[in-house]
Length: 67
Image: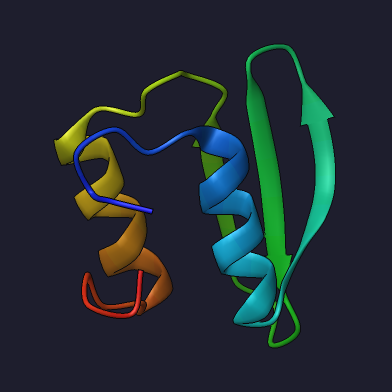
């Protein structure tokens, strides 16, 4: 996976490895919940724009190198 053209499904797969689980899906967004209660919303866009991806990674605490 690269940061250049991430697919929303790839991002969901990565975040599930870090303790997030799909809470709900509605329309063009997926909401994931961490075991400690944090919520993050991911748009179902292909590809996800780089600034959106950076914001999601920052919010979840996952570094770009880990992604």
